[in-house]
Each structure stands twice: as structure tokens, then as C-alpha cells.
Length: 427
Ligand code: HAM
Image (cartoon, rainbow, N blue to C red; front, side):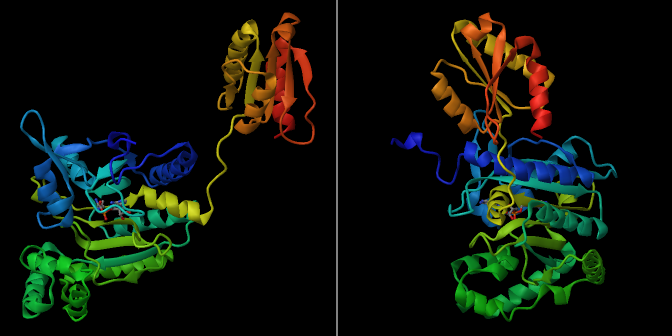
């Protein structure tokens, strides 16, 4: 098949067989978010490249090598969003929403990163992103984590584990950064090319290196949690106490630094052992310095994003997906007048039973074929309209599931009442 008929590498279609799982995850999450007081907003998929550079950081993998950046016809450098936080913060600033206000918002949609595709890692992927802006925590930090825990419970996901850490204030992080640079400079021979490059720009990222000799050096590197400022220490202690009080288990990983530069204090990840190497299903943290750094008034904030593809897969593995939606009634017809009547009767049934699924066969076929399709549709009741029956003013009903499947004729005028009777009987 020619290349332009293939999807772009790392980008996937979600087809009918999978959409039920997606909608289940999305609806469950939307309901949980509403229950916690978060309101959906929608922001553009494209922003100025400079926004991501400044928010995410020049020395991150995302900015260095993963962004889909292009120059538009007007000569502006634009980028398909690799994540949603920068765009939401930009929206809060440019719409004048800050001014001491507190915003609890969420958004959902495609993100784009030119990563090496593998199972669970795509170049277009979907996030549900949640942000609490104007809250300095740690109560809101705890609540956001509880929101995640509740989602896993509702989705039947048991294999999600919480990992937390604190990165301290930007100042204590800076002091730690210098300490780390000194340490890694003393072991520069063990660092790979990536590590050496990061040494000047972003030494914290060396901590999650996948290069074995670097990892051996990392094992003895100074630990950030030992170098936190007093306020961050207290914040982190309260976070842990709050999680304990809610009975949410966690582990502290002092090497959890996250791949984006804007974090300070609380960072967390929900990880799973069920999906292979792409184990992070939901990650986030506090970004108290970001808004002022981008030119907005200093506002503390925290958020997280969930990788929907990964959560859908995890939910599927947990076996907790609801049955796929099926129509309630399948209307079949044979003959020109009957086919026209079928459309009219189906509309009457939709008026009478809002929320019920009423499907018309559409197109002519033998009744045998139509019955097969009715059966495949999963509908519980067939409404059968033929030209002869129509001339006699009757339609036939035939239950398709269960023991009783006798076909019975009724006057057309009684259709809605008879269908109602059937629904009540076969509840
Ligand atoms: P992130 O850790 O880069 O954080 O991404 C969040 C989640 O998106 C990950 O835990 C993962 O589930 C999913 N994800 C990331 N990259 C891919 C990929 N290539 N394919 C499939 N899923 C992926 C952020 O994006 C931050 N903006 C989160 C945040 C919000 N922090 C504060 N507020």
C-alpha cells in the first residue's frame, strides 16, 4: 500500500471496537473531575514555539528533540503541543484569569512528541490534563492524588502505584544543582554523551539516565531530599501525612525528577507493572515558579496529566470494561412504502423513548438477511414492517433474545405502547 495511505508513524486510529473502552475511561474521568470541582476548558493544539521552550526548558528531551515545529505561512514558528500545561498557563495569562483567582480546570486532547514509537508510546497520544492554579497546597496536592486514586478504583485498576518526591523551591533546587554538577564533574569519565551534555544545562536529568555506567555513579550522587529547604521539607511532610490519613499508599523516590523543567516541590507519578517499559500512566507536580517566569503574576499551581492510551489499555487488562452499547430496537422493512414507513415509525419510537437505541436496517435485503443483521446488532426487539402488513395497518414485533421469541402482529397505532410493554416486561 502506498505510504500516504498508512498512518503517520507513531499515530493510531481508534476504531469502533475500541471506542467503548475510550469513552468509558473518558466519561469516568469527566465525572470524577466534576465531582472534585474541576471545569473543562479547551485550548489550541498549536502554540508559539517559544512558549514551550520557555515553559518546558531548553535542555529537556521534549524541547531538544521531540517537538513538531514548523514555520507557518506568516513566518511564525509554531509547534504542535507536546503537553497541555504550557497552553493552559498561557490561556490563564492571556485571558486575564489570574489576578489572585483560583482555577480548577482540565482539558483533554492530542499531544505530539517525536519519540521512538513502541508499545504504549506514540507520537500522537491523548492526555487528560488537570490543573489547580492559585493553590499553594499541600492540601490540593493531596486532593489531586486522591482524585487519581479514586479514578483507578472506579476503573477497576489495581496495578497502579504512587511514587512521590519533592524538588524543593527553585532556590534550593539551584543549590542542589550546583552540588550535583560538582559531583558529576568528578565522575565525568563515567558519563555518556547525553550525560555530559546535560551536565551544564540540566544535571538533574542525569539522575534518570538509562546508561548503566552513569547509573552506577548516580547511585552515590547526593540526594535532593537531603538538601531541601525547611519550607519544602514541611510541605513534603504534610503531603505524606495527608496521604497516610487518606490511606493512599505511596513510595518516596528521591530520584524522581520528571522530564519537564517547570516543577518545584511536589512531583508524583502513578506507575504500573502491567504495561511493559512505558510504565507511567499519570504524572505531574507543582510548578509554583512557571507562571511568573512566563510573565504572569506569581501564582502557585499544581497539576498532572494522564496518558489515556495507557489507561485504556490498563482498564482493558483489568477486565472492568462495561458491555458495549447495543441498540434496543431494530426496525426492518421490505417494500418501498414499508421502507418509508420504517423511518417514520423509528422516529416515533425515538420520540417516545429518548435515550433508547433505535436502529433502522436501511437498504433493501431479504428478511432473512435483515434478521441476521438485527441479531448481530445485539438489539432485543425487532419491529418488522412489510408492504402487505402496512396495507392492513399492522406491524410485527419479535423479541430477539430470551426464551420467548414469537412474532406477533399489532395495529400500527399501538406500536409505542406495545414496545413500552416489552421494555417493562424484559427489564
Ligand atoms: P508527562 O509526564 O510528560 O507530563 O506526561 C504525562 C503522561 O502522558 C505520562 O505519564 C504518560 O502517561 C503520557 N505520555 C507521555 N508521553 C507519551 C507518549 N509518547 N505516548 C503515550 N503516552 C504518553 C506532562 O505532560 C505534564 N504536562 C503533566 C502536568 C500537568 N504537570 C503539571 N500539570
